[in-house]
Length: 183
Image 1: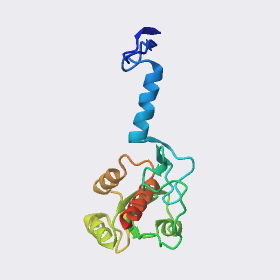
Image 2: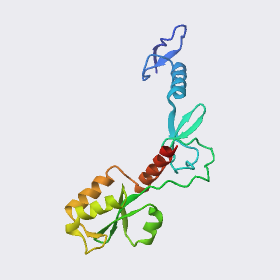
Image 3: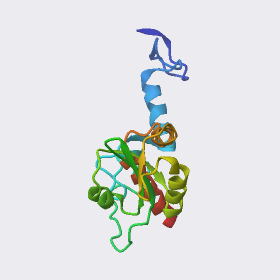
């Protein structure tokens, strides 16, 4: 419902009552287009990023960039570059036990380990894994990588998984960041 005239000099269009500023819809659209060209617009990519698999992108007048790894959408991935090594510590649940392990190839590793649920990922290599084994040694089954659930271990896993809907998305982000650091 129009309430007043547009503040832009020479414009006589009506302004909608719910407009954020007292300018007409046409001038608001012009401003939004200008802001999009200056700041980019975050949106879903037309197809997943070829480099990291993310669906989140930023649309610029010159094209799309992946919001995670900043790869220009549509550009070919250099097949000669080896994938970066991203070591992670993983937490798996099987029945009432939790396995704390590490891998640089978590998809292959987790496919080989019997488990009910992937609980969390943490960036780190064997050193971080050894620290976690020592940290939760009270609940460890012998010299294995399996642990009884405990309040401390549950709290640690909860902290790692807080705000993370999918640990694989986190791993994809760490991989894309490693690619970006490599230049």
